[in-house]
Image 1: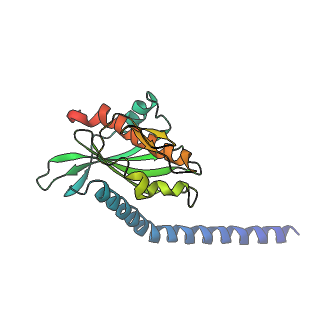
Image 2 (image 1 turned 90 degrees about the horizontal axis):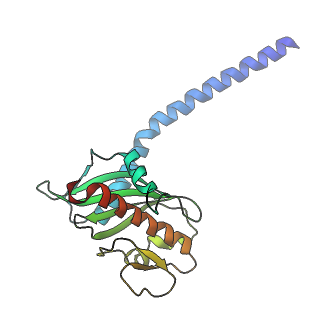
Amino acid sequence: MNKKIVHDALILTAFTLVLGFLLGAVYEITKEPIAAAEKAALDEAYKVVFADAASFEEDANFDAAKATEILAASPFSKDEITAVNKALDSSGNVLGYVINVTSHEGSQADISFSVGIQNDGTLNGYSITAISETPGLGVLVQEEPFYSQFEGKAEETYSVVKTAPTGDDQIQAVTGATISSRAVTNGVNACLEYFRSALQGGN
């Protein structure tokens, strides 16, 4: 019986080693295409929110820990700034920034998106890169009727309302998806908070 246990254990070990090798090989084969697809999605999002830019350059001064510290001291501590890119014109001048943010306040899961902000604080808008909200409800925050409410505005912060807005700082929620609407709005607010604290005026 002991021989059988040893035999079975050896087979199981060999199987585990082979499986581990195969998984490692698959990962090596797929990691570059996956990374390329993710980069392409981000590049497309950057172009959507900063169509005037000729190119985008990663902000070498971005400090994730500092960004977390800034948001922790604000009402938007449930949001996370994940990356910052400079939007450049054809001469290399900075037109503004594209800030990547992840909101942890979605109704179903995190919502990640890119926000374009001009040097004077005017919003170009946002483009969602990852969302798992309810079909037909929360996912509508990535549709034009909702996201267009942010475009061309330069308010300090934005709040969500359920009825028609009475000011430029109010964003009308998607019907039946107030949580998703607020998650995106607070994500935009978080980007503006970081922009004013760390980027505006060449800080």
